[in-house]
Amino acid sequence: MITRNLVAVGLLATSLLNFSDGFAQKGKKIYTFPIGIQSYTYRHSFPKDIVATLDTIQSLGITEMEGGTPKGITTAEFKKLLKERNISIPGTGAGYEQLVNDPMGVVKNAKELGATYVMCAWIPHQKGNFTLENAKKAVEDFNRAGKILQENGLTFCYHNHGFEFQPYEDGTLFDYIVKNTNPKYVSFEMDILWATHGGADPVKLLNKYGSRWKLMHLKDLKKGVKGDLTGGTPQENDVILGTGQIDMPMVLKTAKKVGIKHYFIEDESNIWAYQVPKSIAYLKNLTE
Figure 1 (cartoon, rainbow, N blue to C red):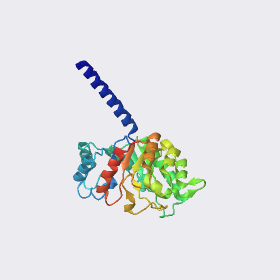
Figure 2: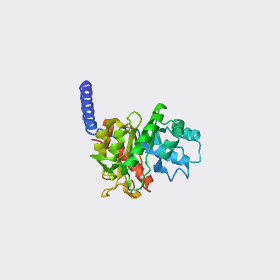
Figure 3: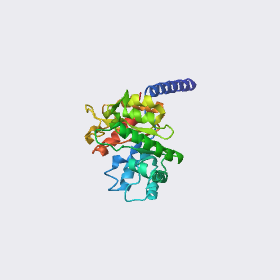
Figure 4: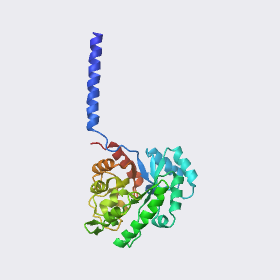
């Protein structure tokens, strides 16, 4: 009798396990990477209290950050604070002029932070009038700076900002930049909000340029907002992931397919403290 009961219990446990496995497969998680943050999200917090800001970031389960050393602290001190909170910096940023005029300074800064990627998020141009000449100069400058970074063990990434999707020939000036930069020296970081705002389809871009994409900024564009080629939009148009007009599940699945491993939530709104935890919950709970 006892043996029969044990067998029955065992069968029940096995069937429940199989059921839960089947359920888990149906609910397979889409986002499987560390949670990252772009430090610009906390641009109003870092100047007030660096330690408290890092404590907040840690409390959200964030383990990767894209950014640089905040003002008022040395890089060594900042790295110590990060290490104590199990936060690494895979990527940092550099301004266009710094890349052109002092690429070795960029290298030094990135290496001090422990970063392996350096991104540039803007190409100087007349607002709303990004030209072929601007793109040609960027190609030349990116190839030159990217070579220096590559020779020093770093990967340079240009971060799209929307204005590059100006029509050109059978594509856009962004296509021109990708096609004319050396893949050995120049990679890319996709900002999915700015790609969408500039009239591009993030999924199509990911598929088109595959492994040229190395990093991603996760953000969502408010439903109903019509974009343009200015590279700017009101802060309130940056909304919680999954509540805007971007097909986030498809973007994330495609990004994983092409090999992107570092994703940074960047919330440019003025209610980031409210939105970021909800965006993180969205990523963690997103299943297919």
